[in-house]
Length: 295
Length: 295
Image (tube, rainbow over all chains, first blue to last red):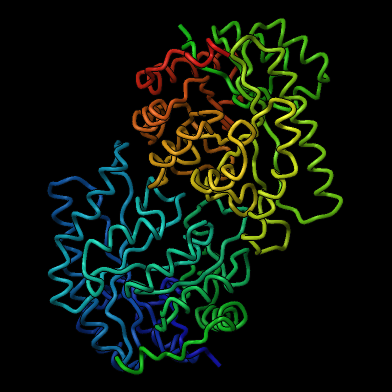
């Protein structure tokens, strides 16, 4: 049986269009999906809402906004505007999803602007962008979810590299407006991880828990280095217990960027994901969707 | 002119034997070198001492010991014993080097043992190994220098991933016995870097400052991702000022693992290193080798 808290992040079956992804997910016994903007926009938001409603799946998060590090100017304005659209999409998709859906927009901070070495400045601009977006997020009932990315992406993807750093930024804002994502692939190595997970939970800021595994050697394209839970070195027991103990009782997404997984038939990838989750993650969950029942 | 605090880490001219490396370094105007164990052992320690003496170069550090994460047993015993030999080598080479040489043995923690996911246990064993070695290091006048490595190496090279974590371990021991290495490549991304550099300096634990640059995309072998200072995104101004302000006034090593650099003629690589250092690092140094003059 597919675990009741397991959500298939759409990136794991990257080549499926939205309708296919919803069908594959539901047919594999999942009750939840994490959506991505590109396949939603491919069919248009109105049609995406219809499809999500018909699927009767929960929407566990919407990926992804962010890319906040460019200095003031046209590109930054366009990015902020696009994030407002992403907030609207998130609210609409969560409303279309089954009860227990979470209106959480996953944010990737963005890397150093071309030619820049000003890491501190880039990080400051992430907070500045959130300050601009918080009002719209709050009005829309959407939680902006900062995802710290592994430090190997600090230069080109995300200047937010640790959970503690993400929380330092998030805590400038109300918890219902800005939270964080705990993704095992990105944070498993962090010596401060368990205490920062507790901190995130205590302030109600865990917007999403994502699980996939780390293995070496890394592939030539380090963006595609993720594996099914259990196929690498991450200790899902300690991290999952910490997230659990921190009070997170929402859906748990498996999000895998891996060319071999993408080249697998989507239904098979969904089934393998569920099996891997049952073996590597589910044994350490004690929560029973209690926050989903009341939402 | 080659900067008086610049030291060529031997790994930058990896294919040169010890005699060649010393000659290349001196001929390029350096007054300091960071030695590696393999080329020293290739000629034997007695001959290495003669060569270092004849070179009239300072020895800024000896690389490298460590690999402390395997559980108790024959492999661990052999590793501890080998680290005692490395301590002896370090003391002997520093004594053979010109005044201002530093008896600092650079330590790489080691990765997760094969098949293990017990990151916390592996980290604990690093501290255990140091506890075994501290007496011999102290008696030998050698500072063990824990080098935190970039988190992308946490699984297979070094479970010590941040300067703060390295200091948490080091501070269990006297500062003259256990210090840390600040290597820009490994720590540039760390949101806590500047405060941890200050902490390291305040307790006299900066054993070595190493500089090279980070650029993306990473090469297929992420071990070889280092560049000449200035060829990437690292802000050497802020990090060098912090190391400087923390009171570190010793030699500064350039240590580059990069196939293109290794394929360069050693004399040319040494010259390019000096030029890069002058442009990217030297302007932010205010110290004038003051601790070298008194040692």
